[in-house]
Image 1 (cartoon, rainbow, N blue to C red):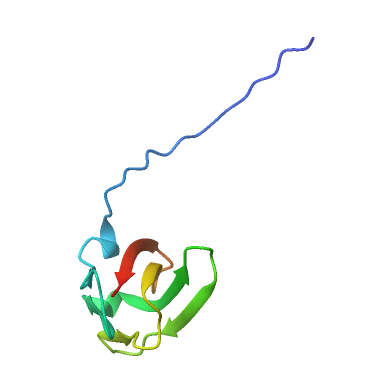
Image 2: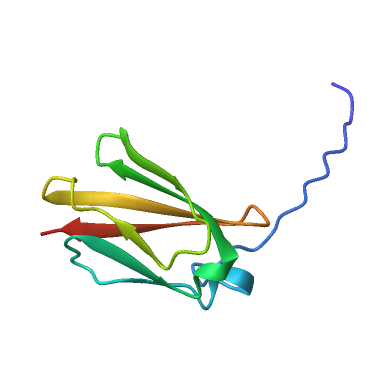
Length: 96
């Protein structure tokens, strides 16, 4: 057997959002006809998927602070928010 050197770099990840995502608020939960975004200026895209992974909405935000969700059925959705610099976060939200 020959000696080999393995170098690994690890980055500590925490469950706490920081940077541009820290001030982002998505509400209400549960939601009805609309989802509202506070500090929406940092978000440029919202992808909403059902629990089996099907995309039901893919919205490019253009200055709006809400997303119309009246056509969605009642259930649980994963709401992915993508910032202008590519950062992402996913929120679990319930439609009433």
